[in-house]
Length: 128
Image 1 (cartoon, one colour):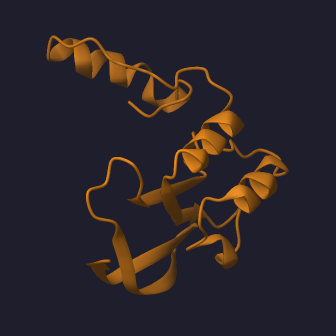
Image 2 (cartoon, rainbow, N blue to C red):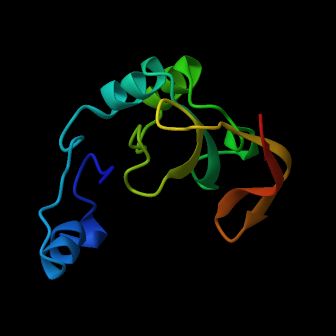
């Protein structure tokens, strides 16, 4: 799993789902420093962008932003925001990295707001 910390409203969901299927959960990121996780993600050559963010915490400019060193610097300065978005502050879409055979290129998108969230509505994509 990609969780860094137990998410309060999930209440051990990862463990219970794994137990239901007779599996032992693997939590390689468990209790790591979120900023270290982001830096290692970038350093290993992975690429992602923000596709959803809470409007009460972020403005529209955060939608579509790449997870890069500037992102890490800025997110680390935000109050009441987990740097990895562990409490649903933001969500990302990974489009390239060491595990990808073919990178994904977003060809067209629209930024939208619904309820208390900004979204990146991807309308077209391709492989590079």
